[in-house]
Length: 478
Image 1 (spheres, one colour):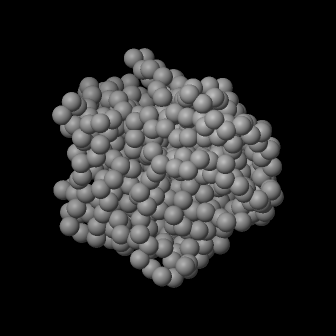
Image 2 (image 1 turned 90 degrees about the horizontal axis):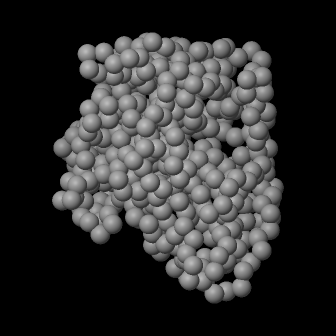
Protein backbone atom coordinates (compact mmCIF):
# COMPACT_ATOMS: atom_id res chain seq x y z
CA UNK A 1 0.00 0.00 0.00
CA UNK A 2 1.25 3.45 -0.86
CA UNK A 3 2.31 5.55 2.13
CA UNK A 4 1.44 9.13 1.12
CA UNK A 5 3.38 12.24 2.01
CA UNK A 6 2.15 14.46 4.88
CA UNK A 7 -0.69 16.84 4.11
CA UNK A 8 1.00 19.77 5.82
CA UNK A 9 4.64 20.76 5.92
CA UNK A 10 5.69 20.24 9.53
CA UNK A 11 8.54 19.09 11.65
CA UNK A 12 7.28 16.67 14.27
CA UNK A 13 10.02 17.42 16.76
CA UNK A 14 9.28 16.71 20.42
CA UNK A 15 10.97 17.97 23.54
CA UNK A 16 10.13 16.87 27.07
CA UNK A 17 11.41 14.85 29.96
CA UNK A 18 11.37 11.29 28.64
CA UNK A 19 11.45 9.47 31.99
CA UNK A 20 8.06 8.08 32.98
CA UNK A 21 7.09 6.72 36.36
CA UNK A 22 3.82 5.21 37.46
CA UNK A 23 2.29 6.61 40.64
CA UNK A 24 -1.10 4.95 40.28
CA UNK A 25 -2.29 2.25 42.66
CA UNK A 26 -2.83 -1.24 41.30
CA UNK A 27 -6.02 -1.50 39.28
CA UNK A 28 -6.44 2.27 39.32
CA UNK A 29 -8.53 2.38 36.13
CA UNK A 30 -10.13 -1.08 36.12
CA UNK A 31 -13.63 0.42 36.28
CA UNK A 32 -12.88 2.25 33.01
CA UNK A 33 -11.03 -0.51 31.19
CA UNK A 34 -11.89 -0.74 27.50
CA UNK A 35 -12.04 -4.04 25.66
CA UNK A 36 -9.26 -4.41 23.11
CA UNK A 37 -9.07 -6.29 19.83
CA UNK A 38 -6.86 -9.31 19.30
CA UNK A 39 -4.16 -8.77 16.68
CA UNK A 40 -4.02 -11.88 14.49
CA UNK A 41 -0.96 -10.82 12.48
CA UNK A 42 2.52 -11.69 13.86
CA UNK A 43 4.19 -8.88 11.92
CA UNK A 44 4.99 -6.13 14.48
CA UNK A 45 4.22 -3.42 11.89
CA UNK A 46 0.79 -4.81 10.97
CA UNK A 47 -2.28 -4.79 13.19
CA UNK A 48 -4.95 -7.12 11.77
CA UNK A 49 -8.25 -7.45 13.57
CA UNK A 50 -11.85 -8.60 13.23
CA UNK A 51 -14.70 -6.16 13.80
CA UNK A 52 -18.35 -7.20 13.80
CA UNK A 53 -21.39 -4.91 13.98
CA UNK A 54 -24.13 -6.78 15.82
CA UNK A 55 -26.93 -6.51 18.35
CA UNK A 56 -25.95 -7.38 21.92
CA UNK A 57 -27.23 -6.96 25.45
CA UNK A 58 -25.10 -4.49 27.40
CA UNK A 59 -25.46 -3.21 30.94
CA UNK A 60 -25.94 0.51 31.52
CA UNK A 61 -26.46 1.76 35.08
CA UNK A 62 -27.58 -1.71 36.15
CA UNK A 63 -30.11 -2.02 33.32
CA UNK A 64 -29.95 -4.36 30.34
CA UNK A 65 -30.03 -2.57 26.99
CA UNK A 66 -30.27 -4.28 23.60
CA UNK A 67 -27.72 -2.07 21.84
CA UNK A 68 -26.04 -1.91 18.45
CA UNK A 69 -22.42 -2.79 19.08
CA UNK A 70 -19.03 -3.50 17.64
CA UNK A 71 -17.87 -6.93 18.85
CA UNK A 72 -20.65 -7.01 21.45
CA UNK A 73 -19.42 -4.15 23.64
CA UNK A 74 -20.27 -0.54 24.42
CA UNK A 75 -18.22 1.27 23.25
CA UNK A 76 -16.55 -0.82 20.57
CA UNK A 77 -13.09 -2.20 21.28
CA UNK A 78 -10.08 0.06 21.62
CA UNK A 79 -7.86 -0.46 18.60
CA UNK A 80 -4.21 0.22 19.50
CA UNK A 81 -1.51 0.83 16.91
CA UNK A 82 1.74 2.70 16.54
CA UNK A 83 2.38 5.47 14.06
CA UNK A 84 3.36 4.02 10.70
CA UNK A 85 1.60 0.69 11.28
CA UNK A 86 -0.60 -0.91 8.66
CA UNK A 87 -4.10 -1.49 10.03
CA UNK A 88 -6.23 -4.24 8.47
CA UNK A 89 -9.82 -4.48 9.71
CA UNK A 90 -11.96 -7.38 8.57
CA UNK A 91 -15.42 -5.92 9.10
CA UNK A 92 -18.64 -7.94 9.04
CA UNK A 93 -22.18 -6.63 9.38
CA UNK A 94 -24.60 -8.82 11.35
CA UNK A 95 -27.19 -6.06 11.76
CA UNK A 96 -30.45 -6.03 9.85
CA UNK A 97 -29.58 -2.58 8.45
CA UNK A 98 -26.70 -1.66 6.13
CA UNK A 99 -23.75 0.17 7.67
CA UNK A 100 -20.10 1.17 7.11
CA UNK A 101 -17.09 2.16 9.22
CA UNK A 102 -15.70 5.69 8.95
CA UNK A 103 -12.25 6.29 10.47
CA UNK A 104 -12.76 9.77 11.88
CA UNK A 105 -9.67 11.97 11.56
CA UNK A 106 -7.47 9.31 9.96
CA UNK A 107 -5.85 10.29 6.65
CA UNK A 108 -6.99 7.23 4.74
CA UNK A 109 -7.29 6.68 0.99
CA UNK A 110 -10.73 7.69 -0.27
CA UNK A 111 -11.67 4.01 -0.75
CA UNK A 112 -11.31 3.47 3.00
CA UNK A 113 -13.32 6.48 4.23
CA UNK A 114 -16.56 4.58 4.86
CA UNK A 115 -19.05 6.92 3.17
CA UNK A 116 -21.59 5.05 1.02
CA UNK A 117 -22.00 6.03 -2.62
CA UNK A 118 -18.90 8.23 -2.32
CA UNK A 119 -16.09 5.99 -1.10
CA UNK A 120 -17.54 2.49 -0.78
CA UNK A 121 -20.81 0.54 -1.10
CA UNK A 122 -22.95 0.01 1.96
CA UNK A 123 -22.15 -3.19 3.83
CA UNK A 124 -25.46 -5.02 3.95
CA UNK A 125 -26.53 -7.69 6.43
CA UNK A 126 -24.25 -10.71 6.20
CA UNK A 127 -21.71 -8.90 4.03
CA UNK A 128 -18.08 -8.06 4.80
CA UNK A 129 -15.60 -5.36 3.86
CA UNK A 130 -11.87 -5.14 4.55
CA UNK A 131 -10.43 -1.76 5.54
CA UNK A 132 -6.69 -1.59 4.90
CA UNK A 133 -4.56 1.52 5.40
CA UNK A 134 -1.47 2.94 7.10
CA UNK A 135 -1.95 5.03 10.26
CA UNK A 136 0.34 7.93 9.52
CA UNK A 137 -0.28 10.31 12.43
CA UNK A 138 0.00 9.73 16.17
CA UNK A 139 -3.08 10.70 18.16
CA UNK A 140 -6.49 9.54 19.27
CA UNK A 141 -9.02 8.86 16.52
CA UNK A 142 -12.30 7.00 16.44
CA UNK A 143 -14.58 4.94 14.26
CA UNK A 144 -18.32 5.02 13.64
CA UNK A 145 -20.84 4.41 10.83
CA UNK A 146 -21.72 6.79 8.03
CA UNK A 147 -25.10 5.27 7.23
CA UNK A 148 -27.97 6.93 9.12
CA UNK A 149 -25.17 8.22 11.34
CA UNK A 150 -27.17 9.87 14.12
CA UNK A 151 -29.30 6.80 14.78
CA UNK A 152 -26.51 4.23 14.50
CA UNK A 153 -24.03 6.17 16.65
CA UNK A 154 -26.80 6.88 19.16
CA UNK A 155 -27.60 3.17 19.33
CA UNK A 156 -23.98 2.37 20.31
CA UNK A 157 -21.80 2.05 17.20
CA UNK A 158 -18.56 3.86 18.06
CA UNK A 159 -15.09 3.06 19.33
CA UNK A 160 -11.61 4.55 19.76
CA UNK A 161 -8.47 4.12 17.65
CA UNK A 162 -5.27 5.04 19.48
CA UNK A 163 -2.17 5.64 17.37
CA UNK A 164 0.78 5.90 19.71
CA UNK A 165 4.23 7.36 19.17
CA UNK A 166 6.68 5.83 21.68
CA UNK A 167 9.02 8.78 21.06
CA UNK A 168 6.52 11.53 21.83
CA UNK A 169 8.38 12.36 25.04
CA UNK A 170 5.31 13.14 27.15
CA UNK A 171 6.74 11.18 30.08
CA UNK A 172 3.50 10.32 31.93
CA UNK A 173 3.16 6.60 32.50
CA UNK A 174 -0.40 6.50 33.88
CA UNK A 175 -2.58 6.85 30.79
CA UNK A 176 -6.30 6.50 30.11
CA UNK A 177 -8.31 6.53 26.88
CA UNK A 178 -11.68 8.08 27.71
CA UNK A 179 -14.64 7.65 25.34
CA UNK A 180 -17.45 10.04 26.31
CA UNK A 181 -20.96 9.43 24.99
CA UNK A 182 -24.61 9.12 25.94
CA UNK A 183 -27.50 6.77 25.25
CA UNK A 184 -31.27 6.86 25.58
CA UNK A 185 -33.59 3.94 26.38
CA UNK A 186 -36.85 3.27 28.20
CA UNK A 187 -37.59 1.33 31.40
CA UNK A 188 -37.54 -1.95 29.46
CA UNK A 189 -34.13 -1.25 27.94
CA UNK A 190 -35.51 -0.44 24.50
CA UNK A 191 -33.47 2.16 22.65
CA UNK A 192 -35.04 5.53 21.96
CA UNK A 193 -35.92 5.81 18.25
CA UNK A 194 -33.40 7.65 16.13
CA UNK A 195 -36.16 9.92 14.82
CA UNK A 196 -37.74 10.80 18.19
CA UNK A 197 -39.20 14.30 18.25
CA UNK A 198 -39.39 14.45 14.47
CA UNK A 199 -38.11 17.59 12.79
CA UNK A 200 -37.81 19.43 16.13
CA UNK A 201 -35.69 16.60 17.54
CA UNK A 202 -33.38 16.93 14.55
CA UNK A 203 -32.97 20.67 15.04
CA UNK A 204 -32.36 20.44 18.78
CA UNK A 205 -30.02 17.47 18.45
CA UNK A 206 -31.07 14.40 20.40
CA UNK A 207 -29.24 13.62 23.65
CA UNK A 208 -29.57 10.41 25.64
CA UNK A 209 -30.46 10.57 29.33
CA UNK A 210 -27.54 8.35 30.34
CA UNK A 211 -24.09 9.98 30.18
CA UNK A 212 -21.35 7.39 29.75
CA UNK A 213 -17.59 7.23 30.23
CA UNK A 214 -16.21 4.17 28.47
CA UNK A 215 -19.74 2.79 28.37
CA UNK A 216 -20.30 3.10 32.11
CA UNK A 217 -22.39 5.42 34.25
CA UNK A 218 -20.31 7.36 36.78
CA UNK A 219 -17.34 4.97 36.93
CA UNK A 220 -14.52 5.54 39.41
CA UNK A 221 -10.76 5.59 39.12
CA UNK A 222 -8.17 5.71 41.90
CA UNK A 223 -5.31 8.14 42.19
CA UNK A 224 -2.51 9.24 44.46
CA UNK A 225 -3.10 12.93 45.28
CA UNK A 226 -1.23 15.20 42.87
CA UNK A 227 0.07 12.36 40.68
CA UNK A 228 -0.08 13.16 36.94
CA UNK A 229 -2.32 11.19 34.61
CA UNK A 230 -2.60 11.45 30.83
CA UNK A 231 -6.19 11.36 29.55
CA UNK A 232 -6.89 11.02 25.84
CA UNK A 233 -10.53 12.03 25.46
CA UNK A 234 -12.91 11.60 22.52
CA UNK A 235 -16.48 12.90 22.40
CA UNK A 236 -18.37 10.11 20.60
CA UNK A 237 -21.85 11.46 21.40
CA UNK A 238 -24.04 12.26 18.44
CA UNK A 239 -25.15 15.67 19.78
CA UNK A 240 -24.02 16.26 23.37
CA UNK A 241 -21.23 18.72 24.16
CA UNK A 242 -18.98 17.83 27.10
CA UNK A 243 -18.01 20.94 29.08
CA UNK A 244 -15.73 19.34 31.64
CA UNK A 245 -14.92 20.65 35.10
CA UNK A 246 -12.71 18.99 37.73
CA UNK A 247 -13.86 21.20 40.60
CA UNK A 248 -11.75 24.02 39.18
CA UNK A 249 -8.55 21.97 39.06
CA UNK A 250 -6.54 22.55 35.87
CA UNK A 251 -6.37 20.55 32.66
CA UNK A 252 -3.09 20.90 30.80
CA UNK A 253 -3.92 20.45 27.13
CA UNK A 254 -1.01 18.97 25.19
CA UNK A 255 -2.78 17.84 22.02
CA UNK A 256 -5.94 17.72 20.02
CA UNK A 257 -7.35 15.99 16.92
CA UNK A 258 -4.10 15.52 14.98
CA UNK A 259 -1.82 14.68 17.89
CA UNK A 260 0.41 16.90 20.01
CA UNK A 261 0.06 20.65 19.59
CA UNK A 262 2.74 23.33 19.52
CA UNK A 263 2.90 23.79 23.29
CA UNK A 264 0.76 23.06 26.35
CA UNK A 265 -2.00 25.36 27.53
CA UNK A 266 -3.81 25.21 30.85
CA UNK A 267 -7.52 25.65 31.41
CA UNK A 268 -9.84 25.06 34.35
CA UNK A 269 -12.77 24.03 32.13
CA UNK A 270 -12.55 21.95 28.99
CA UNK A 271 -14.99 21.98 26.06
CA UNK A 272 -15.01 18.84 23.91
CA UNK A 273 -17.59 18.98 21.13
CA UNK A 274 -18.90 15.94 19.19
CA UNK A 275 -16.15 14.39 17.10
CA UNK A 276 -13.30 16.27 18.80
CA UNK A 277 -10.42 14.72 20.70
CA UNK A 278 -8.22 16.28 23.33
CA UNK A 279 -5.03 15.06 25.02
CA UNK A 280 -4.63 16.38 28.56
CA UNK A 281 -2.50 15.97 31.66
CA UNK A 282 -4.35 16.15 34.97
CA UNK A 283 -2.84 15.99 38.45
CA UNK A 284 -5.97 15.65 40.63
CA UNK A 285 -5.70 16.71 44.25
CA UNK A 286 -7.84 15.61 47.16
CA UNK A 287 -8.09 13.52 50.30
CA UNK A 288 -8.85 9.87 50.90
CA UNK A 289 -12.55 9.40 51.58
CA UNK A 290 -13.56 12.54 49.64
CA UNK A 291 -14.12 11.66 45.98
CA UNK A 292 -13.49 14.26 43.31
CA UNK A 293 -16.03 14.40 40.47
CA UNK A 294 -15.33 15.13 36.81
CA UNK A 295 -18.51 16.93 35.84
CA UNK A 296 -20.13 17.83 32.54
CA UNK A 297 -21.33 21.38 33.07
CA UNK A 298 -24.14 23.04 31.15
CA UNK A 299 -23.11 24.55 27.83
CA UNK A 300 -25.43 26.59 25.63
CA UNK A 301 -25.01 25.08 22.15
CA UNK A 302 -28.28 26.59 20.92
CA UNK A 303 -31.78 27.62 21.83
CA UNK A 304 -33.08 25.55 24.71
CA UNK A 305 -30.06 23.27 24.92
CA UNK A 306 -29.49 23.98 28.62
CA UNK A 307 -33.15 23.94 29.62
CA UNK A 308 -34.38 20.90 31.52
CA UNK A 309 -30.79 19.68 31.77
CA UNK A 310 -28.67 19.04 34.85
CA UNK A 311 -24.96 18.99 35.56
CA UNK A 312 -23.79 15.38 35.15
CA UNK A 313 -21.08 13.46 37.00
CA UNK A 314 -18.99 11.81 34.29
CA UNK A 315 -16.69 9.90 36.62
CA UNK A 316 -15.25 10.14 40.13
CA UNK A 317 -11.68 10.02 41.40
CA UNK A 318 -11.04 8.24 44.70
CA UNK A 319 -7.78 9.13 46.43
CA UNK A 320 -5.34 6.88 48.25
CA UNK A 321 -3.89 7.74 51.66
CA UNK A 322 -0.41 8.20 50.21
CA UNK A 323 1.44 11.47 50.59
CA UNK A 324 0.61 14.00 47.86
CA UNK A 325 2.95 14.45 44.92
CA UNK A 326 3.88 17.78 43.38
CA UNK A 327 3.87 17.22 39.64
CA UNK A 328 6.50 18.90 37.47
CA UNK A 329 5.25 21.37 34.84
CA UNK A 330 4.57 19.82 31.45
CA UNK A 331 7.18 20.95 28.92
CA UNK A 332 6.25 18.88 25.87
CA UNK A 333 6.48 20.83 22.59
CA UNK A 334 5.95 20.06 18.92
CA UNK A 335 7.48 22.02 16.06
CA UNK A 336 4.74 22.80 13.55
CA UNK A 337 5.34 25.12 10.64
CA UNK A 338 3.17 28.26 11.00
CA UNK A 339 0.81 28.27 8.03
CA UNK A 340 0.51 31.16 5.62
CA UNK A 341 -2.69 32.18 3.86
CA UNK A 342 -0.70 33.62 0.96
CA UNK A 343 -1.94 32.12 -2.30
CA UNK A 344 -4.88 30.38 -0.63
CA UNK A 345 -8.17 30.25 -2.53
CA UNK A 346 -11.01 31.68 -0.41
CA UNK A 347 -14.05 29.39 -0.09
CA UNK A 348 -17.26 30.64 1.51
CA UNK A 349 -19.27 28.15 3.55
CA UNK A 350 -22.45 29.56 5.09
CA UNK A 351 -24.43 27.43 7.56
CA UNK A 352 -28.11 28.32 7.96
CA UNK A 353 -31.43 27.06 9.29
CA UNK A 354 -34.25 28.65 7.27
CA UNK A 355 -37.74 28.98 8.77
CA UNK A 356 -39.76 25.78 8.92
CA UNK A 357 -41.63 24.92 5.70
CA UNK A 358 -44.47 22.40 5.38
CA UNK A 359 -43.97 21.57 9.06
CA UNK A 360 -40.39 20.47 8.38
CA UNK A 361 -36.98 21.97 9.04
CA UNK A 362 -33.72 21.51 7.18
CA UNK A 363 -30.24 22.86 7.69
CA UNK A 364 -28.47 24.26 4.65
CA UNK A 365 -24.97 24.96 3.39
CA UNK A 366 -24.85 27.97 1.06
CA UNK A 367 -28.61 27.90 0.67
CA UNK A 368 -29.24 24.21 -0.01
CA UNK A 369 -29.43 21.01 2.03
CA UNK A 370 -26.98 18.22 1.28
CA UNK A 371 -29.29 16.28 -1.01
CA UNK A 372 -29.53 19.26 -3.38
CA UNK A 373 -25.89 20.36 -3.19
CA UNK A 374 -23.12 20.20 -5.75
CA UNK A 375 -19.58 19.39 -4.59
CA UNK A 376 -17.07 22.11 -3.82
CA UNK A 377 -13.99 21.87 -6.06
CA UNK A 378 -10.29 21.72 -5.19
CA UNK A 379 -7.34 21.12 -7.46
CA UNK A 380 -4.82 18.57 -6.34
CA UNK A 381 -2.21 20.52 -4.38
CA UNK A 382 -4.43 23.56 -3.89
CA UNK A 383 -4.42 25.51 -0.63
CA UNK A 384 -7.81 26.86 0.38
CA UNK A 385 -9.04 29.16 3.13
CA UNK A 386 -12.50 28.03 4.16
CA UNK A 387 -14.49 30.89 5.65
CA UNK A 388 -17.18 29.10 7.63
CA UNK A 389 -19.95 31.48 8.67
CA UNK A 390 -22.57 30.18 11.08
CA UNK A 391 -25.76 32.17 10.56
CA UNK A 392 -27.88 29.80 12.63
CA UNK A 393 -28.81 29.90 16.32
CA UNK A 394 -26.92 26.68 17.02
CA UNK A 395 -23.25 25.82 17.46
CA UNK A 396 -21.92 23.47 14.79
CA UNK A 397 -18.83 21.25 15.28
CA UNK A 398 -17.47 21.35 11.72
CA UNK A 399 -15.70 18.16 10.56
CA UNK A 400 -13.71 17.64 7.35
CA UNK A 401 -12.96 14.11 6.21
CA UNK A 402 -9.51 13.07 5.04
CA UNK A 403 -7.49 16.21 5.76
CA UNK A 404 -6.25 18.24 8.70
CA UNK A 405 -6.70 21.99 8.76
CA UNK A 406 -5.36 24.82 10.91
CA UNK A 407 -7.50 27.57 12.40
CA UNK A 408 -6.80 31.14 11.24
CA UNK A 409 -7.92 34.31 13.01
CA UNK A 410 -9.78 37.24 11.43
CA UNK A 411 -6.46 39.00 10.66
CA UNK A 412 -5.12 36.03 8.72
CA UNK A 413 -2.80 34.81 11.45
CA UNK A 414 -2.69 31.22 12.70
CA UNK A 415 -4.36 30.66 16.06
CA UNK A 416 -1.80 29.66 18.69
CA UNK A 417 -0.84 27.20 19.91
CA UNK A 418 -0.57 25.64 16.48
CA UNK A 419 -2.54 22.41 16.18
CA UNK A 420 -3.80 20.06 13.49
CA UNK A 421 -7.60 19.83 13.52
CA UNK A 422 -10.26 17.91 11.67
CA UNK A 423 -13.17 19.05 13.84
CA UNK A 424 -13.71 22.53 15.24
CA UNK A 425 -16.70 24.17 16.88
CA UNK A 426 -18.20 27.10 15.00
CA UNK A 427 -20.30 28.93 17.62
CA UNK A 428 -23.66 30.39 16.68
CA UNK A 429 -23.53 33.70 14.80
CA UNK A 430 -19.74 33.57 14.37
CA UNK A 431 -17.22 32.91 11.59
CA UNK A 432 -14.24 30.55 11.64
CA UNK A 433 -11.41 30.41 9.10
CA UNK A 434 -9.82 27.06 8.28
CA UNK A 435 -6.68 26.67 6.16
CA UNK A 436 -6.35 23.33 4.38
CA UNK A 437 -4.13 22.01 1.61
CA UNK A 438 -5.63 19.30 -0.59
CA UNK A 439 -2.23 18.02 -1.60
CA UNK A 440 -2.94 14.32 -2.07
CA UNK A 441 -5.56 11.59 -2.31
CA UNK A 442 -7.97 12.75 -4.99
CA UNK A 443 -11.61 11.90 -4.44
CA UNK A 444 -14.88 13.24 -3.12
CA UNK A 445 -14.49 14.02 0.57
CA UNK A 446 -17.30 14.82 2.95
CA UNK A 447 -17.65 17.70 5.43
CA UNK A 448 -20.49 18.10 7.90
CA UNK A 449 -21.65 19.23 11.31
CA UNK A 450 -20.82 16.55 13.88
CA UNK A 451 -24.06 17.09 15.69
CA UNK A 452 -25.12 14.10 13.62
CA UNK A 453 -28.80 15.01 13.76
CA UNK A 454 -27.87 18.30 12.06
CA UNK A 455 -25.83 16.43 9.45
CA UNK A 456 -28.73 14.11 8.68
CA UNK A 457 -30.93 17.22 8.54
CA UNK A 458 -28.94 18.70 5.66
CA UNK A 459 -25.78 20.21 7.15
CA UNK A 460 -23.33 18.29 4.98
CA UNK A 461 -21.44 18.71 1.77
CA UNK A 462 -18.53 17.31 -0.20
CA UNK A 463 -15.36 18.66 -1.73
CA UNK A 464 -14.16 17.14 -4.98
CA UNK A 465 -10.37 16.95 -4.91
CA UNK A 466 -8.58 16.49 -8.21
CA UNK A 467 -9.89 15.50 -11.61
CA UNK A 468 -12.44 12.87 -10.56
CA UNK A 469 -16.11 12.31 -11.31
CA UNK A 470 -18.54 13.27 -8.54
CA UNK A 471 -20.90 10.62 -7.22
CA UNK A 472 -24.59 11.06 -6.62
CA UNK A 473 -26.03 11.98 -3.23
CA UNK A 474 -28.67 9.91 -1.50
CA UNK A 475 -30.79 11.74 1.07
CA UNK A 476 -30.44 10.41 4.58
CA UNK A 477 -27.75 7.83 3.91
CA UNK A 478 -24.77 9.60 5.43
